[in-house]
Image 1 (cartoon, rainbow, N blue to C red):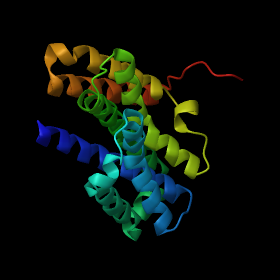
Image 2: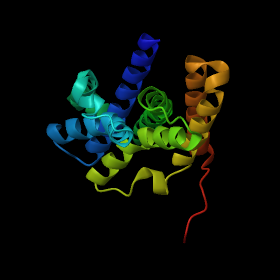
Image 3: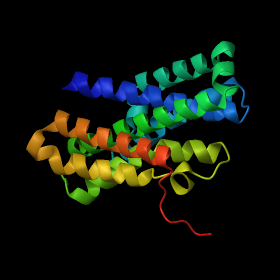
Length: 208
């Protein structure tokens, strides 16, 4: 089970690092900015999660492998050939960042629930869902603020709402289906909702 969780964390880390690095590229940042945004997006939500759960120092410092992976991915994204491929074709850029953001959101939402189950004895539904959503969206919010954008969760297609639904599904199925299955189903729900929302332009009501 530890191997399963580690693999999920690495996949989510890579996905969010790509998302953060590509946002930095779009803002024409230098390599340091690309790396910082990649790392922040990948591990920021987890750091917030650990602080809320009272686990200090956060896992990003006690297990730096995630920050190292995010750094490596960000540097690869900055390679000129890859950079040109991602930034000069808007269609490719949009598809890649949409898929990576959705994948990272789904994985880190359920990872937050797993962490809450592991770190705290207070396994009430509100705590589980709240921590799951914070883990899922926290890094993206930090990324957008550092890049000078309005946080994605407030203006784009259904985003945080997808995380909430997936977190609820994962938490409610946990005792029935077990850890691995409930995490897989919860993450899949988040990813499917996000991709469908982006494709069909679903959005919550907005103020004009």
